[in-house]
Every structure is written in C-alpha cells, then in structure tokens.
Length: 221
Image: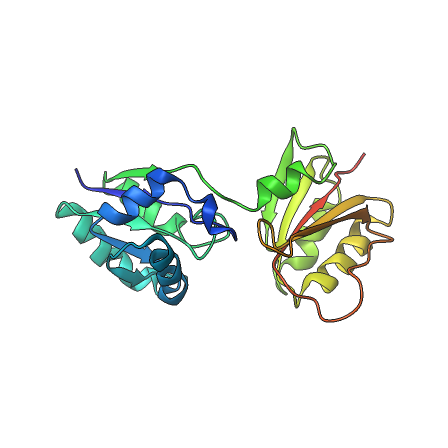
C-alpha cells in the first residue's frame, strides 16, 4: 500500500540507526533527502543501494505535487533528513500536510533527535519543556526572546557554531544571569561534550567554536 515513511537518521554515531530503518531504506521505491551527498554516505555505510532524490527547504514547494502523484500511483517513499527526525527543525511538515490532505498514509518511525538526549543530561527539570528549535536570525527574534523570558517550562534551542555565542549573549540579556543553562555539542560523536553553568557565567572556552549545539535553559521560577 502506498505511503510516506518518515525515517530518522543518526545524529552522529551511525550505529544508532535501527534495524527497521535499515530494512525500510532498502525496500522503499526511492528516498527523499536533504542532501544526497550526506545521505549517500549513510547508505554506503549500510551497504544499501536505492534511488535518492533531493528534497529540502529550497525545492520542497516545487516538488510536492510530483511526490504526491507518485504516492497516489502506489509508490512507497522514504523521507530522511541530514541528521535526526524529519520535521524537527528540518523539512517534513509540508509533505506530511499534503499527504494528509490527499488521504495518503504517513508513518513515522521512532528514532534519533538531538533535543531529548541534551535535555535528559542537562540536569534541568525535563518533565515539562518547550522546544524552540532555531531562534529567528533577525525578524521576530526580539519578540520571541521577550515572550520566552516569561516561559516557566524548560526551553530547548538548536544553534549553529557561528551563532552560538550571540545566542547565549541574547539569552543572558533577556533571561538574566542566574538562569541555569546546559550546552551540549556533537551529541553521539567522538567530541561530544556538555557544559552546565548559568547564563551569566557560561564559557565555551578559547579558540574556534565547532560543532552543532543544543542549548537547554531553565524556565522562569
């Protein structure tokens, strides 16, 4: 039966992929992926040969209809992102929405996502939390930070290496010095590390900043 399969991919350590994911990557008609160059490395590691098609934020609107047509014709299509679960700060929402509107089955496998490990090891309460993904770069950033300064739940953010220092400074400015913060980078990889401190005292050390970051911030007491 035709369906769209959301297949999470490892966020770092390639051994984290599930047996079910491997089986489905081998059997779907073709795989939609953010960057075919990234996904082909995973496929080669798993010794899987299958067709890859690029599907990212710059072409998803133009490719949606052809994908829906393939699904209506009976194909089974897999969707992966460069790392983690599609739809979580990655392309995925638009195609899922269109599948639902066209009464096409969508199935999502459980699997890797960076926010949960970072939250669990932060030492900050995690029974209730707000996932904020990447903050707006310019438009809407100030308003988002102002709103979040009153958030009582633990907050989780993603950030890139060249914006991490600015984001930590902005969080300090809007949330205050005393909020607890945990910053994890390169989760599941060789150079994985986590720094736990407060927004007023946290330091990422000297030298060039590398890696992908997850920031966990205590909510308003």
